[in-house]
Length: 327
Ligand SMILES: [Zn+2]
Image 1 (tube, rainbow, N blue to C red):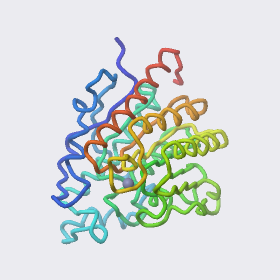
Image 2 (image 1 turned 120 degrees about the horizontal axis):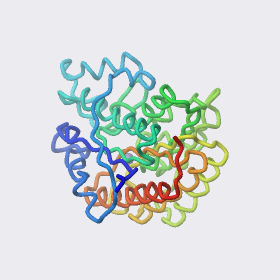
Image 3 (image 1 turned 45 degrees about the vertical axis):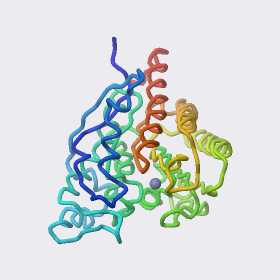
């Protein structure tokens, strides 16, 4: 039997970053997503361990001064990178580099044809971190690093990032705001955290038109959310023709996660995954790397990830049977 072309990137090391009892971005979020807990119902997957890349992978998304700041933060007695969310632990730099490396390993395997789809379980998350600052639990911008790593190492001109975490992907937006080679789309609840996800923010300079925000009211009905999601992603994919899809997959828009009012179900996360794969596959040939962002209710994080991975796995299986290959 050939192994699954859906890769699940999980490394126990990342659960060791001890952010303390008060921080919702906890080791428990990581442990609950251990492969033996997620894949209990026959979903096919390939467990991929990963190691840390050379920290130079961060240079495309972060200023050298900020990278050094994180490296020295603990010994400089800094306890938070921001006001009170992003805890500085003794191992913050090593864990954040390892976290940012997962997506790059997944890109390698997807670009080399060993995998078609991948899900990276990472912490710290990344989408709030901008070039010069960590915030909102995020240290380095895992998905922006993966996007630039792809373009630096492979013949890929257009990458699309879809961020469905319930908070705006402000860091990803800022890093890539003038960059037309990465289309960033963030769908989120309006006015949550930072307040930077306005729909009027569409990019700047050469990047004008390559940043898209969809700000939903908190009381939007799930059916309406999905309808708008399909319209936006479908139209943008047709227009942009991305060669690789990256997903900033947060699970905090789940109805059981009370950091937001948006109330999606596990089935909605499965639908979103299905939509996004189907509208992009003509251009990406299925090449998709999804990276964990938020999700703070342990139960719905597990069930949401399970639903998401079920579709990523099935898609890789179906496409492989059809003989779709790009190498
Ligand atoms: Zn979030």
